[in-house]
Every structure is written in structure tokens, then in C-alpha cells.
Length: 96
Image (cartoon, rainbow, N blue to C red; front, top):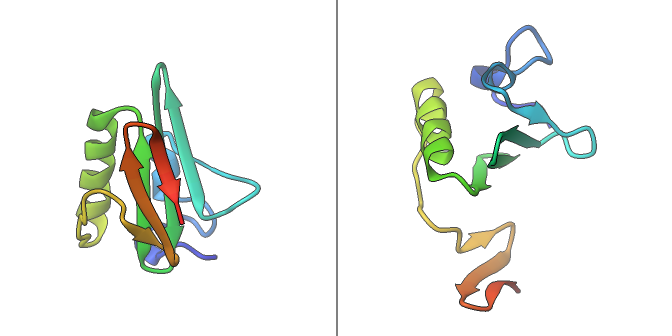
């Protein structure tokens, strides 16, 4: 997978990497960032992006960064991704 031109810089290096995100070697569409207790991940598939993490401030900053490079639409909580339904409850997250 090749990220959109707005995320690319100098060929394979990504602008995301300049903000502390690391591209996974196992899945090139997955980017993660660990900063102290904060963890944020970004998964890109064609024109869909899933963002998750334990730090709402970092997630908001990532959304602002992405929006500044190209228009994104925030669909809020994940409900479907790649044909998988995602639902939450007090017991956890369920995929079907």
C-alpha cells in the first residue's frame, strides 16, 4: 500500500513520521506512536482511516494534522470497518 501523496515526503518517508509516528514493518498501513503513557495508532486502508489510542488529546491532534493535509470526515465511534461490525459494551469490544 502506498499512502496518499499528502502523507508522503521524500518517497517512502512519511510526514506522519515527523510527528513521532512509526510505520509498522509487519503492516505498512499501520502507524503507531508511544509518548510516555500515551499510545496512538492509525490504520489506513484505501480511503478509510481508523484512529485509536488511550489519549484523547493525541487523537485530536492527529485528526487536526490529517485534516490540515487533506479533508477528512470524522465518523466518530467505529461501527464498521472492512465488513466487520464493531460494537462496545461494559464487557469490552465485540467484532462480528
